[in-house]
Amino acid sequence: MVEKRSIILYPFSLIWRFITGVRNFLYDTEILQSHDFKIPLICVGNLVAGGTGKTPHAEYLIELLKSEFNVAFLSRGYKRKTRGFVLAGPASKVSDIGDEPMQIFRKHPDITVAVDSNRVRGVKNILNLEPGTGIIILDDGFQHRRITPGLSILLSTQNRLMTRDHLLPYGNLRESAHNMARADIILITKSNEELPPIQRRIIAREIAKAPYQNLYFTSVRHADPVPVFEGTATEFEINTAIKDPDKGIVIVTGIADPEPLREYLQKAFSEIIMLQFGDHHRFTLKDINKIRDSWNRLRSPLRYLITTEKDAVRIREFTNIAEPFRSSFYYIPVVIRFLNSAREEFDNLIIDYVRKNKRNNRISESQGIH
Image (tube, rainbow, N blue to C red; front, side, top):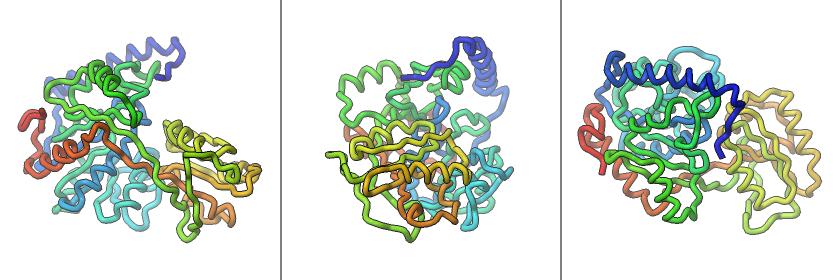
Protein backbone atom coordinates (compact mmCIF):
# COMPACT_ATOMS: atom_id res chain seq x y z
CA MET A 1 0.00 0.00 0.00
CA VAL A 2 1.34 3.42 -0.98
CA GLU A 3 1.75 5.80 1.92
CA LYS A 4 -0.15 9.06 1.55
CA ARG A 5 0.19 12.06 3.79
CA SER A 6 -2.13 14.87 4.79
CA ILE A 7 -4.24 16.31 1.95
CA ILE A 8 -2.88 19.70 3.01
CA LEU A 9 0.41 18.67 1.37
CA TYR A 10 -1.19 18.01 -2.01
CA PRO A 11 -0.84 21.61 -3.33
CA PHE A 12 2.89 21.40 -2.56
CA SER A 13 3.01 18.25 -4.71
CA LEU A 14 1.64 20.31 -7.60
CA ILE A 15 4.41 22.85 -7.08
CA TRP A 16 6.97 20.02 -7.01
CA ARG A 17 5.46 18.61 -10.22
CA PHE A 18 5.95 21.98 -11.90
CA ILE A 19 9.56 22.36 -10.70
CA THR A 20 10.63 18.84 -11.72
CA GLY A 21 8.69 19.11 -14.97
CA VAL A 22 10.48 22.32 -15.96
CA ARG A 23 13.86 20.83 -15.04
CA ASN A 24 13.25 17.69 -17.10
CA PHE A 25 11.98 19.78 -20.02
CA LEU A 26 15.20 21.81 -20.00
CA TYR A 27 17.27 18.61 -20.17
CA ASP A 28 15.01 16.91 -22.72
CA THR A 29 15.28 19.91 -25.05
CA GLU A 30 19.05 20.16 -24.38
CA ILE A 31 18.77 23.69 -23.04
CA LEU A 32 20.57 22.19 -20.05
CA GLN A 33 23.38 19.91 -21.19
CA SER A 34 24.09 16.38 -20.03
CA HIS A 35 27.59 14.92 -20.08
CA ASP A 36 28.61 11.81 -22.00
CA PHE A 37 31.69 9.76 -21.11
CA LYS A 38 33.65 7.36 -23.28
CA ILE A 39 33.05 4.52 -20.88
CA PRO A 40 29.98 2.38 -20.14
CA LEU A 41 27.88 3.88 -17.35
CA ILE A 42 25.02 1.98 -15.72
CA CYS A 43 22.59 3.96 -13.57
CA VAL A 44 20.59 2.17 -10.87
CA GLY A 45 17.82 4.40 -9.57
CA ASN A 46 14.17 4.87 -8.77
CA LEU A 47 11.33 7.39 -8.80
CA VAL A 48 10.24 6.61 -5.25
CA ALA A 49 12.13 8.01 -2.27
CA GLY A 50 13.88 4.92 -0.86
CA GLY A 51 13.02 1.31 -0.16
CA THR A 52 13.23 -0.24 -3.65
CA GLY A 53 16.41 -2.29 -3.11
CA LYS A 54 18.98 -0.30 -5.08
CA THR A 55 21.97 -1.53 -3.06
CA PRO A 56 21.40 -5.32 -3.46
CA HIS A 57 20.70 -4.81 -7.17
CA ALA A 58 23.89 -2.77 -7.53
CA GLU A 59 25.75 -5.59 -5.76
CA TYR A 60 24.20 -8.04 -8.20
CA LEU A 61 25.65 -6.02 -11.08
CA ILE A 62 29.05 -5.85 -9.37
CA GLU A 63 29.14 -9.63 -8.90
CA LEU A 64 28.06 -10.12 -12.49
CA LEU A 65 30.69 -7.83 -14.00
CA LYS A 66 33.79 -7.72 -11.81
CA SER A 67 35.30 -11.01 -12.96
CA GLU A 68 35.61 -9.64 -16.51
CA PHE A 69 35.77 -5.85 -16.10
CA ASN A 70 37.35 -3.29 -13.77
CA VAL A 71 34.25 -2.07 -11.96
CA ALA A 72 33.77 1.24 -10.15
CA PHE A 73 30.81 2.20 -7.96
CA LEU A 74 29.91 5.88 -7.54
CA SER A 75 27.41 7.15 -4.98
CA ARG A 76 26.64 10.53 -3.49
CA GLY A 77 27.28 9.08 -0.02
CA TYR A 78 24.01 10.01 1.64
CA LYS A 79 24.35 11.41 5.19
CA ARG A 80 28.16 11.35 5.19
CA LYS A 81 29.97 14.13 7.03
CA THR A 82 32.59 14.75 4.34
CA ARG A 83 32.29 16.94 1.24
CA GLY A 84 33.37 16.60 -2.37
CA PHE A 85 35.01 13.52 -3.86
CA VAL A 86 36.12 10.76 -1.49
CA LEU A 87 37.67 7.46 -2.53
CA ALA A 88 36.94 4.55 -0.19
CA GLY A 89 39.93 2.94 1.49
CA PRO A 90 40.81 0.63 4.40
CA ALA A 91 40.59 3.52 6.89
CA SER A 92 37.22 4.80 5.63
CA LYS A 93 34.33 5.14 8.07
CA VAL A 94 30.59 5.40 7.51
CA SER A 95 30.80 9.11 8.32
CA ASP A 96 33.34 9.48 5.46
CA ILE A 97 31.46 7.75 2.64
CA GLY A 98 27.97 6.75 3.88
CA ASP A 99 26.52 3.39 4.88
CA GLU A 100 25.65 1.96 1.45
CA PRO A 101 29.08 2.69 -0.12
CA MET A 102 30.69 1.26 3.02
CA GLN A 103 28.62 -1.90 2.64
CA ILE A 104 29.72 -2.19 -0.99
CA PHE A 105 33.38 -1.55 -0.14
CA ARG A 106 33.46 -4.14 2.67
CA LYS A 107 31.97 -6.83 0.43
CA HIS A 108 33.89 -5.87 -2.70
CA PRO A 109 37.30 -4.45 -1.73
CA ASP A 110 38.59 -5.43 -5.17
CA ILE A 111 36.57 -2.70 -6.96
CA THR A 112 36.76 1.09 -6.87
CA VAL A 113 34.20 2.70 -4.54
CA ALA A 114 33.86 6.48 -4.47
CA VAL A 115 31.37 9.14 -3.39
CA ASP A 116 30.64 12.58 -4.78
CA SER A 117 27.38 14.55 -4.87
CA ASN A 118 28.60 15.97 -8.19
CA ARG A 119 28.47 12.83 -10.33
CA VAL A 120 30.22 14.47 -13.32
CA ARG A 121 33.17 15.38 -11.12
CA GLY A 122 33.02 11.96 -9.51
CA VAL A 123 33.27 10.13 -12.84
CA LYS A 124 36.16 12.36 -13.97
CA ASN A 125 38.06 11.75 -10.73
CA ILE A 126 37.56 7.99 -10.95
CA LEU A 127 38.88 7.94 -14.52
CA ASN A 128 41.87 10.09 -13.53
CA LEU A 129 42.74 7.98 -10.47
CA GLU A 130 41.83 4.60 -11.99
CA PRO A 131 42.36 4.94 -15.77
CA GLY A 132 41.82 1.20 -16.25
CA THR A 133 38.20 1.42 -15.13
CA GLY A 134 35.96 -0.46 -17.56
CA ILE A 135 32.48 0.22 -16.17
CA ILE A 136 31.03 2.66 -13.61
CA ILE A 137 27.82 1.87 -11.74
CA LEU A 138 25.99 5.04 -10.70
CA ASP A 139 24.01 4.56 -7.50
CA ASP A 140 20.71 6.44 -7.21
CA GLY A 141 21.47 8.53 -10.28
CA PHE A 142 18.14 8.51 -12.14
CA GLN A 143 17.39 12.14 -11.22
CA HIS A 144 21.00 13.23 -11.77
CA ARG A 145 20.47 14.40 -15.33
CA ARG A 146 23.84 16.09 -15.74
CA ILE A 147 25.08 12.64 -16.80
CA THR A 148 23.57 10.61 -19.63
CA PRO A 149 24.07 6.97 -18.62
CA GLY A 150 24.57 4.34 -21.28
CA LEU A 151 22.12 2.03 -19.56
CA SER A 152 19.50 3.17 -17.06
CA ILE A 153 17.85 0.67 -14.69
CA LEU A 154 14.74 1.86 -12.85
CA LEU A 155 13.42 0.05 -9.77
CA SER A 156 9.88 -0.04 -8.36
CA THR A 157 8.57 -2.45 -5.73
CA GLN A 158 5.57 -4.67 -6.37
CA ASN A 159 3.63 -3.35 -3.37
CA ARG A 160 4.54 0.32 -4.03
CA LEU A 161 4.30 0.65 -7.79
CA MET A 162 5.42 4.06 -9.01
CA THR A 163 2.28 4.27 -11.19
CA ARG A 164 0.10 4.25 -8.05
CA ASP A 165 2.01 6.85 -6.08
CA HIS A 166 1.91 10.64 -5.79
CA LEU A 167 4.60 13.28 -5.90
CA LEU A 168 6.38 14.49 -2.81
CA PRO A 169 5.45 15.68 -0.24
CA TYR A 170 1.93 14.19 -0.52
CA GLY A 171 3.30 10.89 -1.81
CA ASN A 172 6.73 9.38 -2.29
CA LEU A 173 7.58 10.13 -5.93
CA ARG A 174 10.61 12.28 -6.68
CA GLU A 175 9.23 13.05 -10.15
CA SER A 176 6.19 12.08 -12.20
CA ALA A 177 5.80 8.43 -13.11
CA HIS A 178 5.75 9.15 -16.85
CA ASN A 179 9.48 9.88 -16.58
CA MET A 180 10.04 6.14 -16.41
CA ALA A 181 10.35 6.57 -20.18
CA ARG A 182 14.02 7.49 -19.60
CA ALA A 183 14.76 3.97 -18.34
CA ASP A 184 16.10 1.18 -20.53
CA ILE A 185 15.25 -1.56 -18.02
CA ILE A 186 12.45 -1.54 -15.44
CA LEU A 187 12.71 -3.92 -12.48
CA ILE A 188 9.70 -4.70 -10.31
CA THR A 189 11.50 -5.54 -7.07
CA LYS A 190 10.54 -7.31 -3.85
CA SER A 191 8.03 -9.33 -5.86
CA ASN A 192 6.26 -12.34 -4.43
CA GLU A 193 8.27 -15.38 -5.55
CA GLU A 194 5.00 -17.16 -6.34
CA LEU A 195 3.57 -14.21 -8.29
CA PRO A 196 1.14 -15.73 -10.81
CA PRO A 197 1.65 -14.99 -14.51
CA ILE A 198 -1.69 -13.18 -14.66
CA GLN A 199 -0.53 -10.78 -11.92
CA ARG A 200 2.70 -10.12 -13.81
CA ARG A 201 0.68 -9.31 -16.92
CA ILE A 202 -1.58 -6.92 -14.97
CA ILE A 203 1.47 -5.08 -13.60
CA ALA A 204 3.11 -5.03 -17.05
CA ARG A 205 -0.02 -3.45 -18.56
CA GLU A 206 -0.08 -0.84 -15.80
CA ILE A 207 3.60 -0.01 -16.28
CA ALA A 208 2.96 0.21 -20.05
CA LYS A 209 6.62 0.00 -20.99
CA ALA A 210 7.84 1.36 -24.31
CA PRO A 211 9.04 -1.02 -27.07
CA TYR A 212 12.69 -0.19 -26.30
CA GLN A 213 12.32 -1.09 -22.62
CA ASN A 214 12.72 -4.47 -20.91
CA LEU A 215 10.65 -5.37 -17.84
CA TYR A 216 11.77 -7.93 -15.25
CA PHE A 217 10.51 -9.06 -11.86
CA THR A 218 12.90 -9.76 -8.98
CA SER A 219 12.39 -11.06 -5.47
CA VAL A 220 14.49 -10.91 -2.32
CA ARG A 221 15.75 -14.01 -0.57
CA HIS A 222 17.22 -13.78 2.91
CA ALA A 223 20.53 -15.55 3.35
CA ASP A 224 22.00 -17.16 6.47
CA PRO A 225 22.74 -14.88 9.45
CA VAL A 226 26.23 -13.37 9.63
CA PRO A 227 27.85 -11.99 12.82
CA VAL A 228 27.96 -8.20 12.88
CA PHE A 229 31.29 -8.24 14.74
CA GLU A 230 34.16 -10.31 13.42
CA GLY A 231 35.54 -13.00 15.68
CA THR A 232 32.23 -13.58 17.48
CA ALA A 233 30.80 -16.35 15.30
CA THR A 234 28.49 -18.83 16.99
CA GLU A 235 26.11 -21.33 15.42
CA PHE A 236 22.80 -19.67 14.59
CA GLU A 237 20.26 -21.01 12.13
CA ILE A 238 16.87 -19.76 10.99
CA ASN A 239 14.17 -22.25 10.09
CA THR A 240 11.06 -20.58 8.69
CA ALA A 241 9.18 -23.88 8.54
CA ILE A 242 8.46 -23.81 12.27
CA LYS A 243 8.66 -21.21 15.02
CA ASP A 244 11.45 -21.89 17.50
CA PRO A 245 10.14 -21.58 21.10
CA ASP A 246 13.66 -21.46 22.56
CA LYS A 247 14.91 -18.43 20.64
CA GLY A 248 13.91 -14.81 21.03
CA ILE A 249 15.09 -11.93 18.85
CA VAL A 250 15.27 -8.16 18.74
CA ILE A 251 14.96 -6.83 15.19
CA VAL A 252 16.88 -3.58 14.72
CA THR A 253 16.30 -1.64 11.49
CA GLY A 254 17.21 1.77 10.14
CA ILE A 255 16.01 1.32 6.56
CA ALA A 256 13.11 2.68 4.52
CA ASP A 257 11.21 -0.63 4.27
CA PRO A 258 11.83 -3.12 7.11
CA GLU A 259 8.59 -5.04 6.49
CA PRO A 260 10.08 -7.87 4.35
CA LEU A 261 12.64 -8.66 7.07
CA ARG A 262 9.98 -8.64 9.77
CA GLU A 263 7.70 -10.91 7.73
CA TYR A 264 10.58 -13.32 7.13
CA LEU A 265 11.65 -13.52 10.78
CA GLN A 266 8.17 -13.79 12.29
CA LYS A 267 7.84 -17.17 10.58
CA ALA A 268 10.74 -18.53 12.63
CA PHE A 269 10.48 -16.89 16.06
CA SER A 270 7.61 -16.64 18.52
CA GLU A 271 9.18 -13.93 20.70
CA ILE A 272 10.09 -10.78 18.74
CA ILE A 273 10.80 -7.21 19.78
CA MET A 274 10.89 -4.74 16.88
CA LEU A 275 13.03 -1.58 17.11
CA GLN A 276 12.52 0.56 14.03
CA PHE A 277 14.63 3.67 13.41
CA GLY A 278 14.54 6.09 10.48
CA ASP A 279 16.21 5.35 7.15
CA HIS A 280 20.02 5.77 7.30
CA HIS A 281 19.72 6.36 11.05
CA ARG A 282 23.01 7.24 12.67
CA PHE A 283 23.07 5.10 15.81
CA THR A 284 24.13 6.67 19.10
CA LEU A 285 25.27 5.17 22.39
CA LYS A 286 21.76 5.88 23.70
CA ASP A 287 20.35 3.75 20.87
CA ILE A 288 22.77 0.92 21.65
CA ASN A 289 21.68 0.99 25.29
CA LYS A 290 18.04 0.89 24.19
CA ILE A 291 18.79 -2.13 22.01
CA ARG A 292 20.60 -3.83 24.91
CA ASP A 293 17.65 -3.18 27.24
CA SER A 294 15.27 -4.76 24.73
CA TRP A 295 17.58 -7.75 24.37
CA ASN A 296 17.64 -8.16 28.15
CA ARG A 297 13.82 -8.18 28.23
CA LEU A 298 13.64 -11.28 26.05
CA ARG A 299 12.39 -14.24 28.06
CA SER A 300 13.61 -17.00 25.69
CA PRO A 301 16.59 -19.17 26.72
CA LEU A 302 18.51 -18.13 23.60
CA ARG A 303 18.50 -14.42 22.75
CA TYR A 304 19.68 -12.80 19.53
CA LEU A 305 19.75 -9.41 17.84
CA ILE A 306 19.11 -9.26 14.10
CA THR A 307 19.64 -6.29 11.84
CA THR A 308 20.07 -5.54 8.15
CA GLU A 309 23.38 -5.52 6.31
CA LYS A 310 23.18 -1.77 5.79
CA ASP A 311 22.55 -1.16 9.49
CA ALA A 312 25.37 -3.52 10.42
CA VAL A 313 28.02 -1.26 8.86
CA ARG A 314 26.91 1.55 11.19
CA ILE A 315 26.53 -0.59 14.30
CA ARG A 316 29.93 -2.22 13.71
CA GLU A 317 31.67 1.07 14.47
CA PHE A 318 30.72 0.73 18.17
CA THR A 319 33.87 -1.12 19.18
CA ASN A 320 33.20 -1.03 22.94
CA ILE A 321 30.14 -3.32 22.95
CA ALA A 322 30.71 -6.01 25.58
CA GLU A 323 29.95 -9.72 25.60
CA PRO A 324 27.60 -11.56 25.47
CA PHE A 325 25.60 -8.73 23.86
CA ARG A 326 28.28 -8.36 21.18
CA SER A 327 28.29 -11.98 20.01
CA SER A 328 24.47 -12.05 19.85
CA PHE A 329 24.37 -9.47 17.03
CA TYR A 330 23.74 -10.77 13.49
CA TYR A 331 22.71 -9.32 10.17
CA ILE A 332 20.76 -10.95 7.36
CA PRO A 333 22.18 -10.50 3.84
CA VAL A 334 19.73 -10.48 0.95
CA VAL A 335 20.08 -12.18 -2.42
CA ILE A 336 18.35 -11.07 -5.62
CA ARG A 337 16.41 -13.68 -7.59
CA PHE A 338 14.85 -13.15 -11.02
CA LEU A 339 11.35 -14.52 -11.56
CA ASN A 340 10.22 -16.46 -14.61
CA SER A 341 13.76 -17.70 -15.43
CA ALA A 342 14.72 -14.23 -16.67
CA ARG A 343 18.15 -14.08 -15.04
CA GLU A 344 20.13 -15.30 -18.04
CA GLU A 345 18.42 -12.83 -20.37
CA PHE A 346 19.10 -9.94 -17.99
CA ASP A 347 22.72 -10.99 -17.42
CA ASN A 348 23.39 -11.25 -21.15
CA LEU A 349 21.86 -7.84 -21.77
CA ILE A 350 24.12 -6.22 -19.18
CA ILE A 351 27.30 -8.01 -20.25
CA ASP A 352 26.66 -7.39 -23.95
CA TYR A 353 26.19 -3.68 -23.27
CA VAL A 354 29.50 -3.38 -21.43
CA ARG A 355 31.39 -5.44 -24.01
CA LYS A 356 30.03 -3.67 -27.08
CA ASN A 357 29.84 -0.07 -25.92
CA LYS A 358 33.36 1.26 -26.18
CA ARG A 359 31.91 4.72 -25.72
CA ASN A 360 28.89 5.68 -23.68
CA ASN A 361 26.07 5.62 -26.24
CA ARG A 362 22.46 5.19 -25.19
CA ILE A 363 21.82 1.47 -25.55
CA SER A 364 18.20 1.97 -26.54
CA GLU A 365 19.27 4.28 -29.35
CA SER A 366 22.45 2.54 -30.56
CA GLN A 367 21.44 -1.11 -30.20
CA GLY A 368 17.81 -1.23 -29.23
CA ILE A 369 16.27 -3.49 -26.58
CA HIS A 370 13.84 -6.16 -27.68
